[in-house]
Image (cartoon, rainbow, N blue to C red; front, side):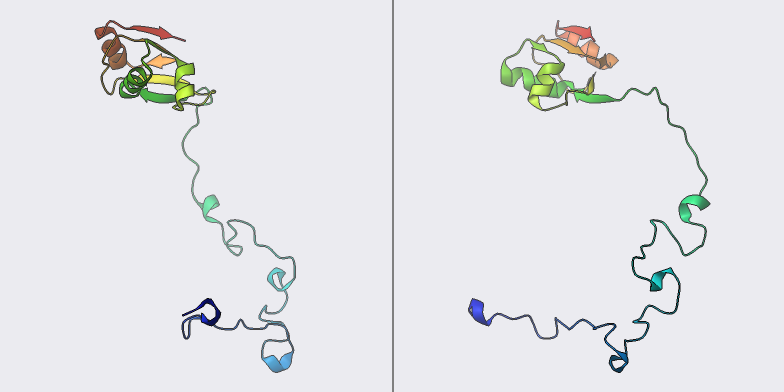
Length: 148
């Protein structure tokens, strides 16, 4: 087998129908588009969610819920992540800048420290928010907590 004699498997390909090439082809005239209406004309594009004049699904279903405009989103960081950072970089202090450099958060994120995991040594941790279990775990290792 060489590149010059490769071909698709038998029956796996077929020719496309040539539409709009005269009455003799059987697909001339309206060229499979039917008579009149938007879909028969060039430049037609159906709107997203359009269901042929039937009431669309997004209008049949009721609105529900509530969006709190004052909600503050935090990026959760576990104590296990902080411990990994501390042991890898031999650090005594972890703050938002350290987490940004480590690739755990982006510069516009607010950070919340969660208590999942353990610390191996005392660390000063600076962040926007802390869970109660995280504060307890940090202070149990004689570290300190600073809220931004």
